[in-house]
Image 1 (cartoon, rainbow, N blue to C red):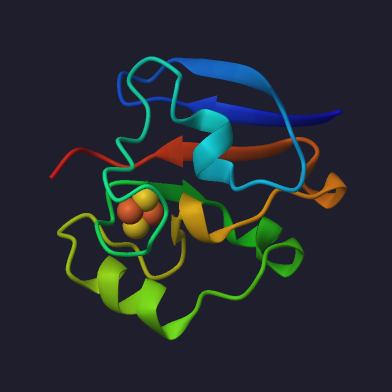
Image 2: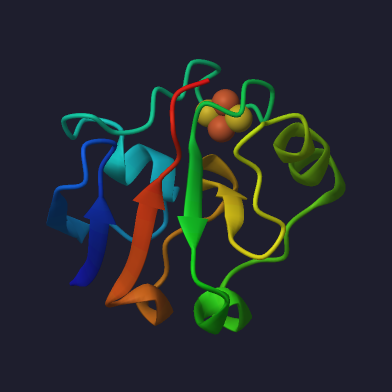
Length: 105
Ligand code: FES
């Protein structure tokens, strides 16, 4: 089991039993006050924005150019912590990871 600790848009932290092999976005989009993920994971909407602390980044896939371009258009972009959750595939290495859903824009 891969546990994700997800803090939603109203500040409530929920432990999610995530399914590896699919994206973080797909694992968290059905939660209350979570990501909207309007484009369905095509890296074209940025409504799946989450913050992940830098200490976890060596266990994540790299932030790609297109992802970075989408993130940089957000007012809430944090260069140190912002990711698009649709661009991260959950693996066993993510057990215990904490993420915070970005604000609505
Ligand atoms: S779901 Fe649209 S960019 Fe991630």
